Length: 129
Image 1 (tube, rainbow, N blue to C red):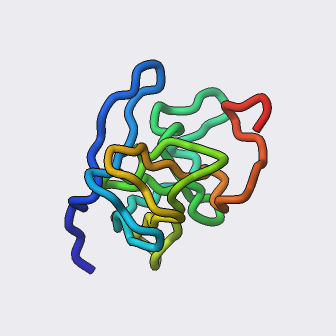
Image 2: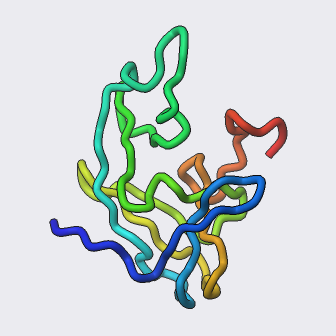
Image 3: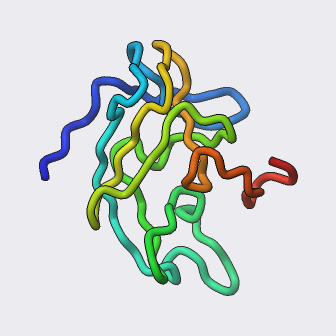
């Protein structure tokens, strides 16, 4: 499968939040926003008993004892419990981001880090979802 950077998105800094992914133009519900390759690593390369690496904030659970780093802009989407986009594995080495609703130009595109857009489980950085 060939990959090409999406013309639907761009990255910019958000004061007090870091970087985020934004829509470069209006995106309709159901549109594939981005297809990205992933790099799969053993979980112990990212998390150890003593420390977690900087990459720990950017990986996805990928399988039994594995995590993945999504390339492209894949690891830069910010979290929301009311996301406007979702993501899913596409085969063994890629991930797809799609619009869950219409997204306006220059609107930040967010995903639910729990995987399911409706999952309100507490995350490592949240006290209350």
